[in-house]
Length: 221
Image (cartoon, rainbow, N blue to C red; front, side, top):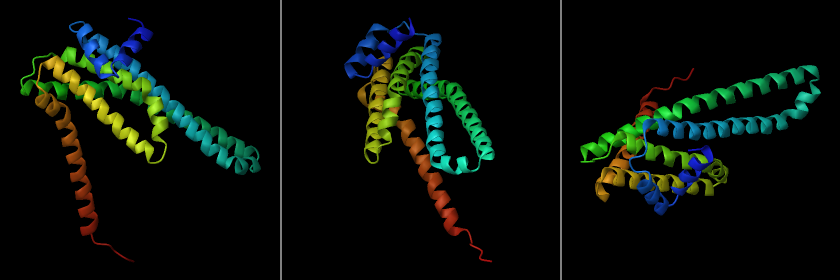
């Protein structure tokens, strides 16, 4: 399957009925090699987007300090060149980390879903679940640039990010439910329990940090 055809299939999964159709059409056809290809393509899209975003942020800040650098003459130009090189290197490093890290984290998260599904009586395989999960991840990677642009809008960005995240969880729920043959409640538990645990850990760490900062003595010299 070519990249364009692959992406077209991914985008079908952005609609609930499209997800159902893809699950039916590709049932038993996926493997870990295909899921890795999906994750790598999706990671490449995200990495390229992050690289471009970093450079755009640098250009924005550079334009603000351009008059000051210009007045500094050759020293200013040297500083600007060094800063540009550093920005490119940092953007490239972040992009590479994302390119490698996203597939690893995705396989781990799919493993958590699979274990929970098995505990609750799921019958699907890790391979098939991960294959469909990688296709869904690829679909959201394709539309990620548009989501990020909208997310930059004050107030509206927060709402859009929440809605997109909730919708992605809903589509993941459909995958888990279909692949493992679970009922609605157990499929929802599989998808939501890891999120609840992560939020709970975050709140515990936050409360501990607040308590520590309040209880720690403040020394005034």
